[in-house]
Image 1 (cartoon, rainbow, N blue to C red):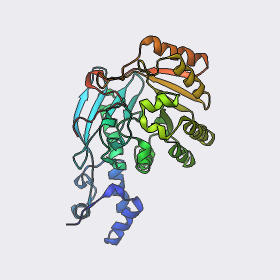
Image 2 (cartoon, rainbow, N blue to C red):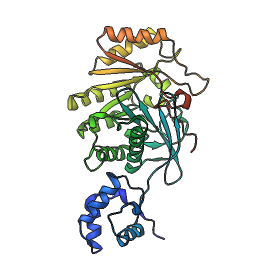
Image 3 (cartoon, helix red, strand yellow):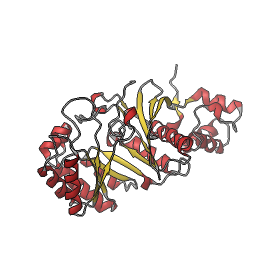
Length: 346
């Protein structure tokens, strides 16, 4: 039995060729493409302006590997966590994070993760595979629908801070963003999308060379190599000197500020030396710092630092003229801290 190809892996041009080859008009490919991306069709039967014969032909040749929201949890603060089941049975998570003025989708890019950040629940899972562009797109579409349903407004922002390292699935992430921002997809502005990376210098430079229009965030957590390697062991292969150089390159090419994601942990990076190192690192390129409240994943080494320690960071960063914000954890009652997503179903 021949395995059918996921139709969303095919370009509009190839779809048009498919119909011409099978004795139909090329514009039929445009219709199908609209159903797949703009209208988010989950089956060929949804494509009601196509004849039954055309739908049967598509069914015989292709599949639509759409996601299914297997379980949805709603927090008291309005946060929604989706357990998303993929066509092969694997599960990832995505989160809707509402505020008074916006709703943000936090989406996954991989099943599991190949990196080894010691504070992250996802890092305890082996990387099973990359997500396809359509699977990333589907997460956004599902959250857009939930935003309209529960908050009476469409999705306004997207962050790639869920499961996985986006830059280790670069081509698929870029393709998904192309469709999210396309008028043939969701038509969102790329300036409302942020890709968060643990910091892979050569890929940051590649993004700059590719002239991407979305925003960049870096999970920094320490501006001291030895401390950062303790928090994120893989970073010993990417010293801060190389990361700094790639970020300087990014800013020269894009003129886009960098956001640093930074958790302050008790006994790890809650001292004046760590604060001073961050202030120094922030002066290399225009940036802002998001200090993130940590949701512990167990009773182990990584525990949220005191408010006094966080306030020291705020004081010193502001004194140096660096924009700093504190991002409180959302959805605590459903364990939905964005960027610390745990895959309990997989």
